[in-house]
Image 1 (cartoon, rainbow over the protein chains, first blue to last red):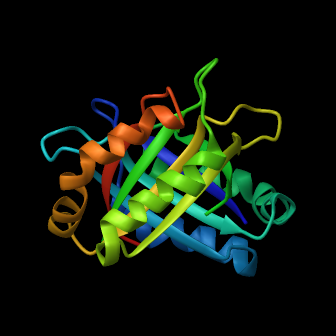
Image 2 (tube, one colour; image 1 turned 90 degrees about the vertical axis):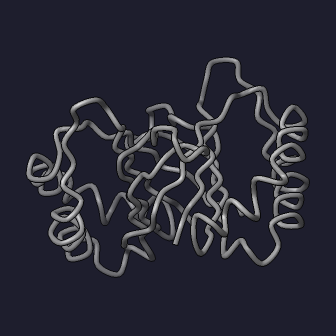
Amino acid sequence: MIKLSVLYPNVPGGRFDLDYYRRHHLALLKARLGDACKGYVVCAGVSGLERDSAAPYVATCELLFDSREAFEQAFLPHGPAFRADHPNYTDIAPVRMVSEVVG
Amino acid sequence: MIKLSVLYPNVPGGRFDLDYYRRHHLALLKARLGDACKGYVVCAGVSGLERDSAAPYVATCELLFDSREAFEQAFLPHGPAFRADHPNYTDIAPVRMVSEVVG
């Protein structure tokens, strides 16, 4: 199984509208990806390991797919639509990673 | 629900023994955390969004807990044991984050 991680760095002065992200962007992702997306987790950064430390990311989204091919077929054609919604909730450039679930 | 993310940056020349991590370190985590850990996912970085791009992290581990308090009670007392095993599988300093699952 393949995981796409989209991580929004906790940069000084960065804007991230979590409410919009959950209500609208996530709905867009689910509508466009359909059954190819086997699961997703959205998280809001709280801190580092210690309570008083800064979270390295303000928000994260992880999406699961059966394979790299399934991810690319489902996700890449909608890349422009996903990116077009980006300024509506953030001005932070995300870190994106494809990884393989191994345990 | 609270998620602890431990992310190992894909630094040039960095060492990460995924086989040891899965066989030994993950077993140590599971044994010490017990029922307080409500789920976990270990991933191996493959690439960025594009196939020929570098993965920002060589490996990631995410652990779920019912609450911040449950995480701290279960995890922090075993921090020294977890850290002592660290040189056995990597020389990379991990990025660690506590986040709240919101979707």
